[in-house]
Image (cartoon, rainbow, N blue to C red; front, top):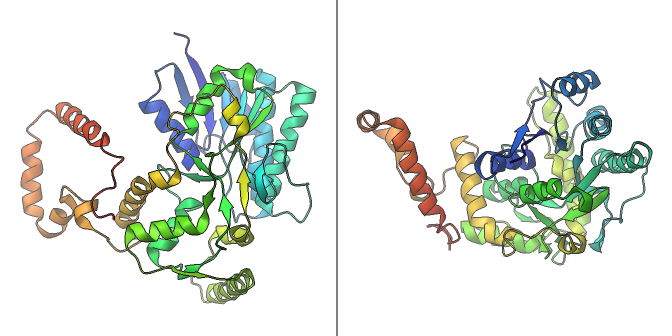
Length: 396
């Protein structure tokens, strides 16, 4: 078996975390993935990049790193553009493939958009799409001038687990769960394309296994069918049996006015020394009111086979809701929903109300071999996973 070693930048995010999890649990052991944190390798420090790749000679580089959506222009340009370009230049000099994760933010509004449909580069573009667009354009230039072997994977709205940040799809879910979305900030006919983070590692490793078929190309990695934003919001509301958001559609001009009022209040509160900020996603409020769907034709015509073609954001919703609500409850970000569902072994309740009973129970378990207990626990988890397609208890 031929073994290879790659470097992943951005391993702490939703996409990077999923890649690391895939390598750890599902890969056949032929691939080692290094994921240096920003202390070891900062995309803002070219010298960090030079030292790291002189010490580690990888067989490929994957870049899934992005700055926070609402970062200042310097941070955005240094991470999303100049840092991504520095990685690509290193890959070109090392003569290794470079996998770059990009965004549908570089594309205009519209339906069935193809890979070549990109926004024109303008000074008035928002910082995030401008930086991602400039990165794609520079990769094209590096291929022509330096022979860079790259593949751009363009993502829509990404959904999946293994993310500790509340942004993108998670921000939408959190807004519904926390009750901060009383009405629908969209139109009834707005559609968007969604990307399944669980499938992405399979595609990336397929690209690495078949480089000749993917080199120098861009692929829209999205589910074939677009998603109605209002339908998704109302489906989440139905699963959680909530009364809000109400099925009332706020016009864009009112939503924009409301955002300006909230921004003003946040600035006034900051003068009092209280930390407050508007979610970065509201910078893209206009996108909530405009359809943007990406064509998956190029992806479907490639040699890649979808490992789970029936999976969509709707089929994954029960698992996603369980994962994030459990996490947010544990972090005290939201009020508990259903303890029977979220704490089936009653450990949290025992810890809170009967610590002596929990102490004795754990001490009895300590008499058993630890590794054997873990193996039995994994076996039970595997059995439970076989029924994971059924909506969990507590969901309608």
